[in-house]
Length: 470
Image (cartoon, rainbow, N blue to C red; front, side, top):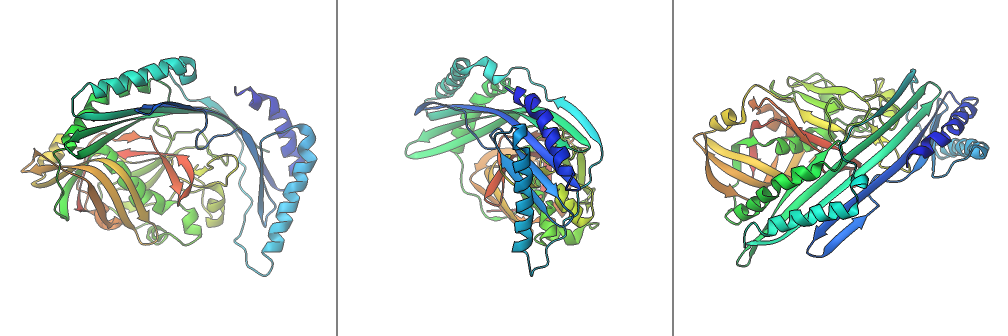
C-alpha cells in the first residue's frame, strides 16, 4: 500500500534539485495513508475508510529569503516539475504584491542540516490483516458483555480505529522516511434508573495495532460499573478543594492549562502570556513538563511534517518555564531551535506548532500515599473536555466524577458532573505531590482553535493540587 512512496521518490528528488536552482531552501513531504474505523451500537454496525488527517499526497515548500510558498497536490509525475516550479514562483510573487505597503514578518531561510533516517513503529496485530469480520465480531461480543453485566444497563457502544501512515521528507540535505501506526478505541455504557440515565465512557489507545481490543475486553465491565455508580452521584458544593487528579485528569490539565499556552507560533503573534514568563516560576518545584517522542503513544513520531527530528522537550523544569514548543518557521522567526512540533492536519493543510505527547514527569509518592494525605477533598477522574485562554491563562475543564476523600480515605460518595476552573499558575503552584509513574493516553484529537485536527496524547502521574470545583 505504501509502495507509491518508493516509486515517486526519484522524481521528488529531481523536483528538489530543480527548485534549488532558484531558491535557497526547498522541501517536499510525501504522505501515503491508510485508515479505517469500526463501531457498533444499537443502531448497528458502521465501517468507514475515511478519517481526520487522512489522504495520500504531497506538499512542496520553498523559501526565497523574504517569503515562503507552499503547494499541495495528490498526483505527481516527473513531467509535472516545470509546472510546479512555475506555481511556486507565482505564489511568491502574489504574496509580495499582497503585502505591498505593509511590513511583513521576517521569513528566514530554514536550516537544512544533513540527516538520513528510515524507521517504523511496532505493532503486534495489524487491524487490516485481522479483517472486518473478526473486528466486528469482537466489538459485538464486547457490547454484549456490557449489556449482560446488569439489568440496569440500557445500551453500550464500542468502536476502534487505526491510522497507518508512511511519510517521506526530502530536502537538499535530508532524506527522512517513517511509517507509524496508532490504534484508538472506546467503550461507552449507558445505565438507567427510572427516568434517570447516566453514561460512562472509557478511551483506549496505543502506538500499535489491534491488540488494543484485548485491553477493551478486560475493562468493559468496569465501564459498566462506572455507569451504574453514576446513578448514585450527586451535585458538588462549589468551592476550592484539595484534589487528587487521576493520570488522565492530570493529562487534561497539562494539555489545556499549559500545552496550548506554550505553542510558540502564538509567541510570534503575541497571543500567549507564557512568552513573558520564560525563566520564571510558573508552577511548584514538583512540576516538570515534557513534550515529544521520548514515550511511545499515539502521537509518537520520528520527525515532524517540516523534517525536524523528534525528541524530548523539557518545557517546565522543577517549576521554571524553560521554553515552549515550536515549528520550524516560528523557531526561525524567534531565533530558536525548532522542537519537532510542526504538524499538519493533512498534506493539504498548513503546518502549525502542535503538541505531541505532552505530560508531567512522575514524582516520589504512591497514589495511596497521596490520597492518604488529603483531609477533605476529592479524587478527580474521567475528564471529558476542556479549554483554555493562552492570552490570560484561564482554564475551564469538565470531569465526569469526583470521589470524596475524608481523613485520607475514600468515602464511597460520588459527585458528578464537575467543572474545574482557575488561573493556570495558581493551580500549578499549588501542586504538592506527584506519584512515581506517569501514564499517557492518546484516544483523541486536538484542534488549533476550532480546526486543524491532529493526533495528540497527554498524561502524567497522580497529582495533588488545590483546585476550584463547581
